[in-house]
Image 1 (cartoon, rainbow, N blue to C red):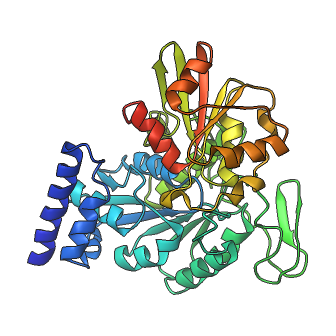
Image 2 (image 1 turned 180 degrees about the horizontal axis):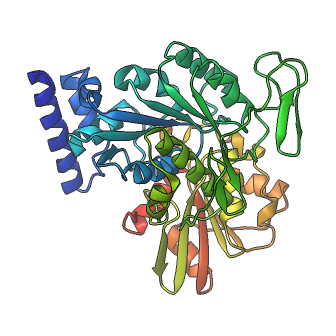
Length: 406
């Protein structure tokens, strides 16, 4: 690397280490931020010489990235932004910290995908899904799909791994000449009722979908989730054993296998590594405290709340909502979530915007109790399982109370 890039890399690693030592965080942002201030091209220099995979979408990025890094690790050391810092500063910090590795698997915020593609020149890009998120500052979902489509059309050399079950993703990826399709399911349909190409309604039946007014339709996937396993492009079925809960994580595992397959990794080699992943930056972590088994679930938008309800056991459940800058300041998305699945259990609510949540639950006829803190919530439930579902900063607050579990 040029001397300037070497100096920037050293400064990045030093700043990240100091941040961790001071207890100010994991250093996954500040290190990259300082490095890029010294050398704006540092991410390009650090990515050079590595085979890079990028993982993007509205939901499931962090988990899929962790599973993919585990799978690609069959081949050698992998640099990855395992704590979810998914903007260029986080990517820079992750690559600087790991030093030279032959591979990198990076989670990318969907807004930053074009910029990161330009900087890293990836071998593979995985597109998971698109749905509404952070309404006060994010692009409309159709605009995001157009941004992806335009970007991928200008990079025909990139291999794309894309979700055949999401019409917006299919429309975006169709501009690419090299696409591998996977089927991970799509439970959230509210952002894909209308065809992004023609504006006609999307029709659905028996797992298939098609536009009622143009040729856009679900492509035939090469990787398919079936029961408790995944069918690969050869037609072989592989049992997938995960420590992570929910059907959605079986889909994330299928995506990871598909991406790893583009690097030449066979499912039989990758699956043992996937089975050892138990928690990702606190997501799905289980902590025992005062006779309670606490499980942490992150849910930041309507689609992810739907999946969280599927993962949660029928047990006392704490919901925590903030509206700080990383969360988005607009909480009107709560009205897109159907909280009815929680009617059969004790529900506690907390967080900066607990009263916004209280109104939504009252309208949804879900009984609840407000608590002022996580400790109060813990004291309010009997020994046993406590499910915690929280959006981003509320989730981090609770992790801090529990000593930043990973």
